[in-house]
Amino acid sequence: MNLGRRFYDYFRKTYLESTQGRSYTNNALLFHGYSAFSLEILEYCEFSSCIEREQYYINLLLPEYNILKTAGSRLGSTHSQETKERISEALKVLKKENN
Image (cartoon, rainbow, N blue to C red):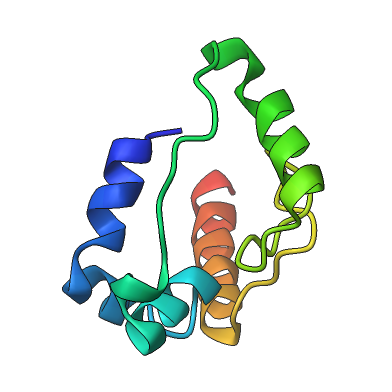
């Protein structure tokens, strides 16, 4: 929900490089360069209707770089093997702490 932060990250090459291989959008920005993309505000809306409006535009525009097809949901996303291992280790630590 913090678009300012997201835009800030997209325009920092060091951030894009540090996430290389993890984000389709970041990889595309690195590969094609910023001049191959445009950024537009499609609509201003109340915070309470952001998810509904995002879903509307996902359905209307079928964006190539938005791999998640349901607004507000991680449905369809996958974790890298490295991320899966980190999650597993973190869960093991939590389990030990709770026993």
